[in-house]
Length: 245
Ligand SMILES: [Zn+2]
Image 1 (cartoon, rainbow, N blue to C red):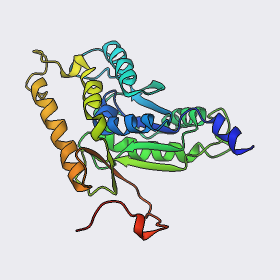
Image 2: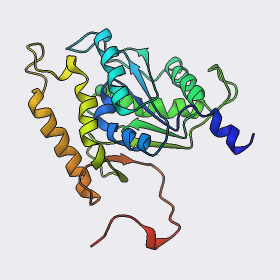
Image 3: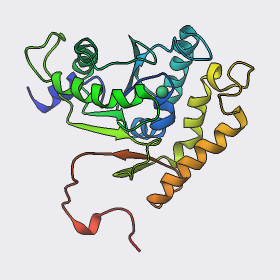
């Protein structure tokens, strides 16, 4: 295959995999917007349909996820049907994700960071990694051609961990907020779950404050944090980003 043929076979450059519809909007929506603005093709794979949520039905969330994907400029979004609130790292689930990875052939996959309050988020870090690994094995039953992404990064917004790098989302913060608020069933003020959920008017303040915090770490206004497991490789010390002093 020539380089051009390889790139044509790629249906997405960046694939974000998350447990729940609206996870991506919270942890890496600004990054997806920035990648789309750079001309890259982005995609989202939600692993559950949201049937266990306190608010809204799975159908509500499907409609809202579609709207949010449009706002994020995401070309493809699909949901699998893993057990909401009880995702497990089984062979069946690894194969289901590997099937999508082989179809989309993303160069980069974004996963949630493995240390998380919600057990689904924590498990998806290892489940997603292992699925990307087996997608490259020729003898597994996942259809298509073997394929392994070049890079996996972990969205660490809600983890108490020092990020490896920040993506500057300053120009995209308002658009990211619109995408999150597309989930009216979750975030609009309503009696159901009112003691559990943050009031609508506070969501903007909280999410912007988090983005401001991470932006400050890298000297920009708003940012989203990521962890990469690999050590970085530098070609030219004079081109390193982020001022030291
Ligand atoms: Zn979630």
